[in-house]
Structure formats: structure tokens, C-alpha cells
Image (cartoon, rainbow, N blue to C red; front, side):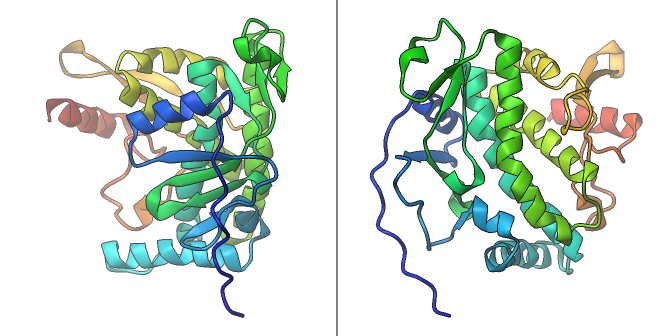
Length: 288
């Protein structure tokens, strides 16, 4: 079956979360988010994949994971296990997708809703396209009167909106990846939990190093450890480094499976990395 021609590019639009996405691109210039109207088609062809296509678990997901399979073999000189390839692909989608929700919340106290059918991703260019819809905000927000606004009473209600909006988006995507993974259910939601935390924590430091501590506090409130289907708390803690220096770290709820390719090079926040190794790596990073 021949590939369909790329759809004509629809006109981008602005919304109450556009400014947040602009700041995201300023902080991370390789990434961009383009908003379209609810009736516009999402981009197709030229490397674009729809979140709904990933959720379907068919040919679109096969093509998406072929990139990860080739990258693993090229960079590591070995084939990755199918579940490892799937884990890499899921991470490389969900890390970007979660920022659609956490960045506007962190910067503007606004939480958009983007079901899987409203999002497309161009991984090689780190581009996201979304069909704008409704959003939640607080009572005093100037955008509270905008079309599509859903006003919630307080900060905790808005945090619930963040959790619900990302869960609505990612749950069908996890369903598409699930059959290709060795571990499902709790392990998949553990990955989703980690992406929520580590994505915005990284972006906060790029925005302003002083923002990372605020971000940590916000994430501890967002994910206190009892917010199913998410797994565990935000997981931040302090380690005592050389000279009594405090070294911030966190405990991931899941493993990214990179150890299957390089057992000696685990992530600092990996459940497999002991505290002594974390201290050594954090100290070396600070010194560099």
C-alpha cells in the first residue's frame, strides 16, 4: 500500500497556553509545539506519527520503533531486545508528550486537554503538533473567560487536572506499546510517572537554575505517592556528598532498560544505581 502524500499544512493558531510553549522552545530550542484549530488535520508524512497511531499498535508503531531498533544497533553495535526497543521508543515519545501538560501548568497555571487523537509527533525534529481544545485554570486567571476554559477552585484541583489530562492522553499509548513490553500495568505507569517528573524538572533548570527547587516542591505536591494510576511519589531525596555537601537525587519508579546495552553505565536515578555510585557520579558531574 503506497504512502499517502503529506497533508497540506494547516495554519497555526494561538491559545491561552501558547506563551508557555514559546518559553519551552526558548529554553530547549530543539523542541517546538505548533497549535492548530480543533478542525484542522494533524501533519502527516515526513516523519510525523500520530499518538493515536502509536496507540493502535500497528504499522505506525512498527515504523516508529524501527528508528529505535536501528539507532540501538548503530550506536551500541548490537541488537536490542524487542522489549528494550519498545521501552526506548515509549520514553522518546512520552518525555516530550508530558511537557504539553506540565509546562503550561508550571509556568501559567493552565492545563490543556489533548487526547491522543489530537497530537502528532515528529521525533527527528522534536516537534509536536496539537489540536487545541479545552483547558483548566484557576479563578483569578485572566484566561478564565476564554472559550474552552474550565475554572477549578484551587491549586489541588488544578494538580488533579494535570494528572487527569496526561493520564487521558498517555493511557491509550501505553496500551499500544504494552504488548511489546515484558512488563505492563504498574511498570508502564511507572515509566509515565518518571516522565512527568523528569521532563519538567529538566526544563525548569533550563528556564532558570533557581526554578528547579520550586519545581521540586511543585512535583512533590503533584505526585505525593497516592495518585493512581501513577506509581509512587516524585521520589526526590538528598544524599550526603564529600565534605557534607548535599546532593539532590530522585528514585525512579521504573527502569529505562539502558543497562541491557551498557551494564556499567546506569542512570543516576536508576533503581539499579546504589547510593555510593550516585554520589560518585553526582560529584564528578559537579566537578566537570
